[in-house]
Length: 315
Image (tube, rainbow, N blue to C red; front, top):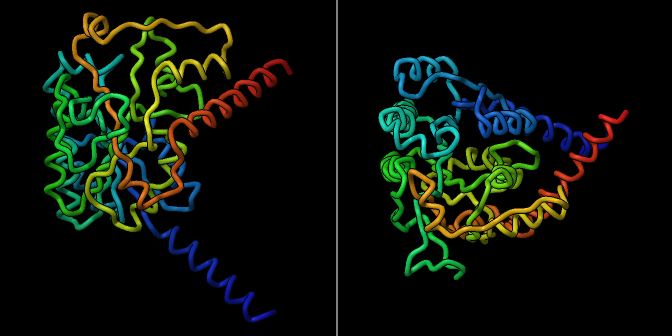
């Protein structure tokens, strides 16, 4: 056999072997929507993955599972957003603090003490358009901009966490916004807003999970740290998404708009609307597509998924 071919084969197995030895411990990886997606992606990429349901606020239990697994990287996807929405947090403040603040800091601290890289799946819902970042201007909030939105208790806890996590040198905090999946999962923003009686028509940064979640393993191997706006570049409005839903999924779908002032009258807490600057993320991963390009691919895949399901049901 040609010596070059032998070298290539050996290199292939060495490379894949080293990836397989890289071990992830995923909190929220057994039951959480995004956690389960991350576990599947990491498994498909050939890594060793251990999902866990251990509650973050139970420090001794966290220490036990971390010491037992001895991961190269810990990923936190656990936390409380509230059911059916973040208004739940307004009346369950102690529970929200326990999960979103105390629990996440517990995990970050344990990881720090054991010198383990820690990735927290955070949120970008800590900003709102202002005079320096006007709606529709294309000027997004960078990772260096201090949070300016505490209109909901959920966002208030996330603002505090976003700041405190940066005290740990081993932490990578990924700020998701309005996550979108390629399927009909009810928590995907593209599906969730189809169930609203009325929607506000505001451009926002959003995270297409199929574009972003596969990058996590490489971010872990590079041991990236700090805050990253984990969104597709650009912004897209609610109406643009619903128009695509009507075009690709349900031609008879109709929706109505209302103003933020009208929306606030039916909610217990205000909502974050903002565009995040994705420049830092794009510098590391320039292949991430613009949200308006990516969302078309999302609906094309959803349409294909629906057609296959209809065909399978008919057979």
